[in-house]
Figure 1 (cartoon, rainbow, N blue to C red):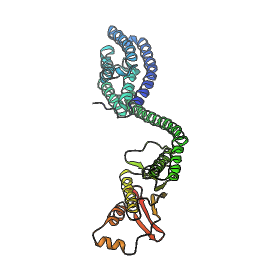
Figure 2: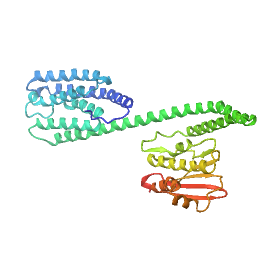
Figure 3: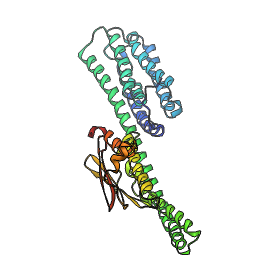
Figure 4: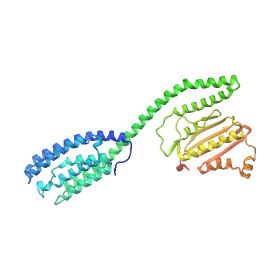
Length: 381
């Protein structure tokens, strides 16, 4: 099972590819360092033939690793396990080459290639596992642990996880960058389409609505339908004017949801920027607004105009739903509740109360207005 965190595969491949190309330089530098130091310390070898074989093996594996890690399809667990196993084996064979009282291992810093490869692929967990494996072997093959040995182990244990953490951060930033570029491209395309719709379709719909009403007869119904489509298209264009970062699953844009309620009889006004709200709370609040509009259609008339206004007040959202009907007679709501008709009590006031908000009613001969105040998140309750 992979220890790597899930994420955008394309971003991960791109970041890992650049890091492995940088690792090529590291592998070559530490290889040259290992070869030069072993030549310099050749008098310390008790088995020169084995030492030469180990150095040749390091050179050969470095060349193979550079080739293998260059293709993302070959960066699989078998390759990484083999990389670390060879580094461990090189360290474990050092006592056979130099004797029990050696100071420096044969591979030296060459083992950094495997350590960094694990950190790149499996992030901080991989860096920690590789560092711990190398450290255990390094300490196990020594007769005594000196301050220098402790320093080497300490560097391994902090380098692996830190490099892995930085790799994870780079992937996260690459994903965020790709999302931002995608959002910008979508915004540009939406703007182009909005201009095309505005310049063509909306003008035609507006003309049909105006001329249909003038001609009368069956054209009146056509004019009404054209008016509804024009209103919906205008609402859609207003929604595209603001393109925010992709919403999380836990949140939604309340303004966009309310704009979908717009029609030829319902006018919706929202802020010029996204209004994020907890997804469940936003869905419930939209249901309350829809219930208010249903009441307008039922008690005032199917063609009665209604207005919906969304405002942000601190941690709360305030949604006003207003009509220009005759208002609700005094005692009408109490009588309806007594008769068992709990539409207003449950669909509006009850739902808003469950959300930790309040629903205020203002009604009279001038019309009816509901003012719904709801916290945007549970923490604000």
